[in-house]
Amino acid sequence: MKAGIIGSGIVGQVLAKAFKQEGYEVLLGTRDVTKEDVVKFGSENAGIAVGTFEDAARFGDIIVLSVKGTAAEEAVRLAGKYNFENKIVIDTTNPIADQPPVNGVLQFFTGPNESLLEKLQALVPSAKFVKAFNSVGNTLMYKPQLKDKPTMFIAGNDEEARKTVTDIVSSFGWETADMGKAEAARAIEPLCMLWCIPGFLQNDWQHAFKLLKT
Image (cartoon, rainbow, N blue to C red; front, side, top):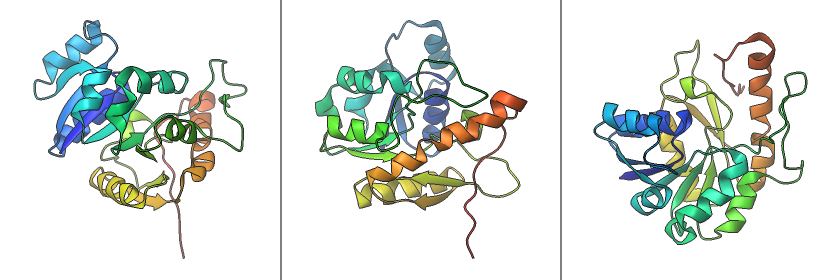
C-alpha cells in the first residue's frame, strides 16, 4: 500500500514516518520542495519520497490530509480533485480560525451544525473522507505511551473506508470509536478545542481521550 501525505508540517512528518514504520510506501507532499525543513526531512528519512501536493495525491492508495484547516480546501484543489476520486482520505484537519484562543479555547470558523470534513466531502463527493487524528497532538499520534490505550474518534460516510481507517488506527496503538457518518465530525472536531485547553492554560500536552464502556 502507498500513503500520500498532503502537508509537510510536523503532523505530516510524524504520520509519514508512522506509515513508513507500518510498511507503507510513503510520499510526503509539500507546497515547496526546497523548504529547509522539508529538505532536512528528506535527507534524514531516505525511505520516504518528497514531492508536491499533487504528487502525493496521485501516489497514494490512501491519502492523508494534514494541513491547516484554513488551507484544507485549497490544498485539495492544488493536489487535483481528480486524484482524490474513490480514494480513502484520512482528514486530520481542524477548522481553527486565525484568531488567537480565548482563555485557552480555540476559535473555529465553522458553526455547530457543520464541519470541515463535510466541506471537504462536498468538494470531492466521490472521495472517501474519514476524520481521524484531529484531537491529539503529534507526539501521541503513533504508539502513544500513556497509562491506558486512548480512543481515536472517527467519522465518515463510507463504511468500508472507516473499517480500513480503524485498522490503521489500531496498528498505530489506539482504540477506535466509530461515530458513523460525516455529520459526526461536528462533534469530533471540537474535541480539538477541549484537548488544547490544558496545553494553553497549563502547558500540558501529554494527554488523550478515552471512551469508557460498561
